[in-house]
Length: 320
Ligand SMILES: C[S@@+](CC[C@H](N)C(=O)[O-])C[C@H]1O[C@@H](n2cnc3c(N)ncnc32)[C@H](O)[C@@H]1O
Image (cartoon, rainbow, N blue to C red; front, side):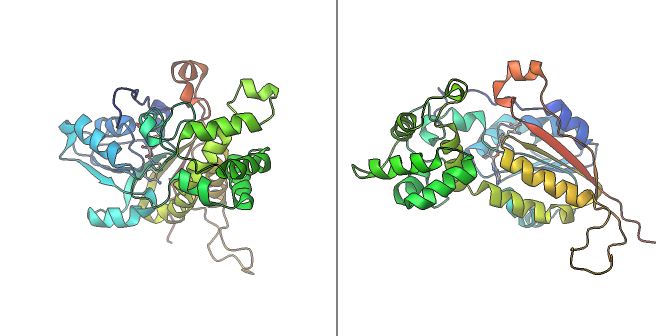
């Protein structure tokens, strides 16, 4: 990593997350996206002296950084380079049963975005990579250089929610005639020339949405989130809490709908003629509306501006 250019990651909504997780001594917790270790440190402090934290990140550099940063907790901090979608296997490997609390803080860290060599930023020149986990088979340049115009249009429109997706995909394919894209700025320049200037252009860089779409696709971020949510309740004790922080509207939508479904009293599939779940919800919603950073936090940390924190508590089932 280019340490010289990377700034520290300021954890977003840390106090609110800690308030909702409700850590206690002796508890077992999971940080599915340890990043710079900001939440991890707070969880370890709040669960002292004997709480355990299993902390994952799909980026090997994040794991190495946290290992260096938190040596004081090595007897109760278990780190693994892994995708949180694989949490069931990781808990099994660490010999852990259901846990008291889980947090995931989605997206990229400041370390990743400010490191030009990782290729996440349209403002820093670097290889067009965008893999959080460097073992992943496909980089952003692989997608940009090989997808058909039609597939590029869908990707940019669906994952970037970009109204100029068709134009951008056309311009990319035209430019590929000269040679493949290899760097972030090559792509950013093509997008800038293609997207018409509007009032919005001054607020948001024209490359923002396309870069976001590519990052989500390269890292299969929505798929990982869906896979994680499909399994997570089985990994929690009754009364256990799950907190999620999302920065992207597509991710937040998935979480919102899943939490809503879990919190409704009848969770039987629609085609079942009679309720078989005894009408008990799976979770209690701890945040009816998402918690958002206040203006002071946004001023201190502009990256926090689109963060949405949601939380649920696994219902203690009445077995009588
Ligand atoms: C916003 S940062 C987390 C910052 C962290 N909460 C802190 O306090 O420093 C997001 C981190 O999640 C990681 N990540 C994103 N998706 C992941 C996934 N599916 N599995 C594991 N880690 C993931 C990224 O590599 C990145 O380091």
